[in-house]
Length: 421
Image (cartoon, rainbow, N blue to C red; front, side, top):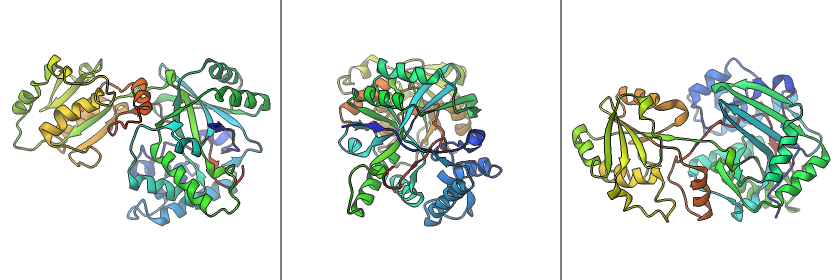
C-alpha cells in the first residue's frame, strides 16, 4: 500500500507567505491568538482559529466558529491570499531553530494506511478535541494544519531531499523563537516519481504530533465515503495533510508539570516521602536544575529547586522490558503523582497542568510563585526512539509526554477536500 502521494496544494503567493503563516491552532489560547491576528488580515489564524473574529463570549466549539472559518477561507481564495497549484506536487519544508535543523517532505498520507496501523500512533485522543477537528474540516472543506509524521531515516530519501534544498526556495522567512522557515515546491515530474519510488521502500510511518487531526481525518473519510455512491478510494478525503521528518532530525523537548498539593501536606513532609524513592539535592536556580539525563527530575517547591534522581531501589522496581513503564513520565506518575498526590488520571485531573519545555524552567517557577500551583516538576525529554518503540508495541504513552520543536507553521499549504485532486 502506498503511504503517501503528492497533491495540489492551496498556498500563499511568495510575497505573503510570512504574513499568512501562523502558529498551529492548539498552541495558542484564544487571547494570544486574537492579539496576533487582530492587526494582520492575512494571518492564517483567521482560518484555523476563527474565533478570533467573533465575540469572545461565543464558545470556540460553536457552529458559528466553524462557519466563520469557511467564510474566511473562501475570502482568502477569492482575494488571492491563497492560490491553488495546477498539478500534484510534493513540497519540502525546512526549519532552522538555533543549532537544530529539520527538513520535512510535505505530502498527503493514506487514511486507509492510518486505519490499518501502517501509520502508527502513541497517544489517546480526547473526544471533544477530535470532534472539534472533525467539525472544522467538515465546515471549511479542507485540512489546514499538517500532521507531523516521522520515519526511520532512509539515505535514498535524504539524498533526494538534499537535491531539492540545493535549489532556490519558494519561501524563506524568520518567525517566532528566531526560527527560520524555508519552503520548496517540487514541480519536477521526474523528482516527484523518484520520491514516490523512494518512499515505496518505507513500511511504516509514525504520528509524532497531530493525533487529533489524524483521527479526525479518518472520521471525515468515512463521513464523505458514506455519502458518495461512486466512492473509488482516490478522492481527496481519503488522504490527510502531513509533514514527514526523518527520526534523526526530530527534536523533542521536555514537557513539564505544575501541580497542586493539599494544605495538609507540608513541604518537609513531601520531601521526606520523596526521599524514599529519590536522591534529593538542593539546586541554586532554574538554569542549574534542568535535568541532564533520564530518570533525573527537577522539583520546584517552596521557592527552592531540587534535583531528584531515581534511587537504585526504585530502579529495581522498573521493568525496562516494558517501554511505557520505563518512561520518565510514567516513573513520576507511578512513584509520586498517584501515591503521594492522588492524581490518577493526568488527562482529567484539575490538580495538574502541563508546560511545554520551550517556555523554560523559569516559566514553571513563575507559575508556582503566583500561588495557584504549589510545585512544579521538570523532565528530561522523551527520546524519539522511545516513541517509536512504544508505537511498535501498540502501547500508548502517558499524556503530554512529548513537546516537539520547532512547531510546523499552518497556512504554508492547505489540502482541499474536494473529491478527486
